[in-house]
Image 1 (cartoon, rainbow, N blue to C red):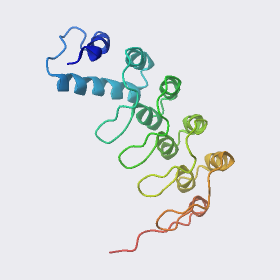
Image 2 (cartoon, rainbow, N blue to C red; image 1 turned 60 degrees about the vertical axis):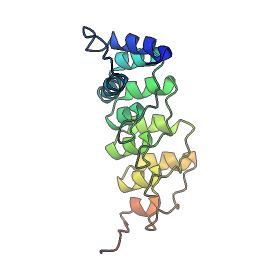
Image 3 (tube, rainbow, N blue to C red; image 1 turned 90 degrees about the vertical axis):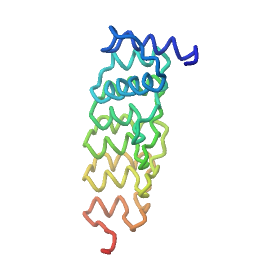
Length: 183
């Protein structure tokens, strides 16, 4: 294990639940356990634990096997204080998971209006698309989040942008959904 990573790992390890256990010799096992603690802290909204990772210099935009970052997980699980702390520490609000979804899209999907509003205040494009060609405004339209759709429009989102099926945020908000043709 490289020396520059040893100090942050020991600092984090001494704070987590396994503090009474030695750091495993296998660097991959250490990395996996730290990832698990980091992502779990984001899901639970454990700001104190997130602070330990932040102070130790842990990479805030580390992704799990699905491409989720701590910010995406915190937003999806409604952990407002954790979202705020991660953003303040420099987490990338524009990061996308393996399907191209962002923290904003997750917050809109889950109905986390305050978190979505906070994420809209970042420098991300309101027209950022996921792998299916959908935007946050399309999510807001589909899930009937009119207040967020209006806020996205005010931020400059193109409500007439179309996904590959021809859906627009405005059409989705009216309940007009184009589906793939049956096979």
